[in-house]
Image (cartoon, rainbow, N blue to C red; front, side, top):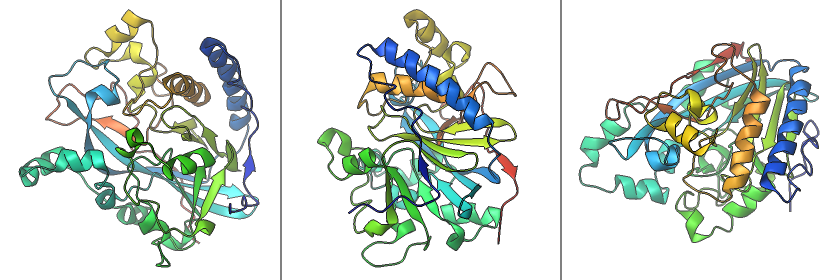
Length: 354
């Protein structure tokens, strides 16, 4: 049984049929055309009431995945910052609060990939070096003054490494966010419940087990949540991947994990060793986060779609208003693996604490 779509959420039809053409280049052109029009619609809407991105934890990640064989590095790893996005917005049902990418770091460590990576007698020595910063979701939310019971929805671009039981409750036990529901693409939920072995490496075992079905809102495609906020289906990295689009005083910010840095969306301006030359040599202008390649053509098109919606940054027009949910960050262990441009933590508006 599927939970009915909340009355304030409406499906977006702007991209319906955009990927129907047989040729990948034709699909790219049509998606780009639709994304340009959608951008103008979003820019015409009011801003969200509050938007803040908050650093949660740094984790190691293979260079060959994060920058899909484009970067030259003496280390096989780079460092990424997982971030929480706290967004409040006006809806037809009043002010709503969304937490985008609330990662339960302790539980997420049980993901098979990270279990293998950390399964070493040297863990007490290397973990402080590989994970030099750690903050819980509860601590991050407290920085805003927003109470857990104010959270209406949580969402993730996809469910890799995520254990959501703590937030929503499991097997009748209450969650940290007692009034929250998960917003997830129907394809992502179906996939997470019936994984292939090739997918299971990146999904947290039992991470969605025992959750009340009434807490799960499955979206049949892109959706408008309220004023200035939408979740847009961006398949490729996973079948049910989606991106958050938020209207702010600095324009539209788009968030996902399709790319791990601004360089991924504008590689010909990158100073990361090897990335610019790789892009120029092969004539590509997108570097995918490729730990899984469920459909690399779709992911390439989705990343072009994201940057088209986001538009150029006013801070540096060479790059786009992309705010990755997991962003490449400098670490002294990997001295040349750092983004050419980064927004870091962002904040717009004032939190509604009523």
